[in-house]
Length: 354
Image (cartoon, rainbow, N blue to C red; front, side, top):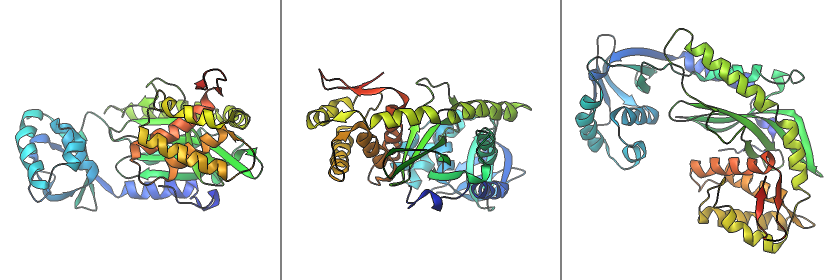
């Protein structure tokens, strides 16, 4: 969760990558037969293989990996089961799901914590090379030393924005928004690269999709000699496209300040924000409209779509009582306003994205 007071407080990309590389270099990788695993009712994972033996603490990520391998719905496995029930479930399911020939890759941290587990047919997508690839795709007139990292999530999965302070605009007086790209990796290891915006005054973040399809969800590289290289090459292509969006985002963000929202339009937003591409619950929509009214009360003049962009990006960046899924959806939702030509229909009072 972002708690910065300004972009100047954010770590540089160089420092951030050095820390990530140091962390990843401390991990140890093992390949073991899948039948060597046993989850005990104290929550520890027993491994009995020639090259790795003992009882190890499981990270939350590794526990989710085990659930996936066993074919168990991971939110239920992580949130609704105690250690004893997990042990019973895996003791029953793992022998059915993992053949005698199947081998698994184990990543060990500090010699005692299982960091992650996966089928050895896929390579681990290390984060440091991904971030290096993203920075190499930056515009030529931007220095790597100037890039800043905004960290939204960095545990089992990660979600960060790499912002170039020099790529900025001023939609309103004394209001600065800087641009860059967002890089996220899901629990399944797939990576997405999108455009990003960061409002300096309130540290609000937004994500600008490259497209509506899922083709930019890059799956983990396959375990073959050129798998990692091809994976990073694809990330580079999408990173270049994401970096190129900043001028379009500036144009659309400044245009949002000219699209007026009166009280009737604000009321009409409630059903619209529950539809595609936002898909927000009524509870979240009501919180957005409450934040929007606060944004309106803090300024002179009438409300605009820029205030709605601010409200959604604020909620998606700072609202701690929302799930990570909704916070992410809100940041993407804010990005929809600059990805399209957003307007309000004077006849039906509906928000239109074209």
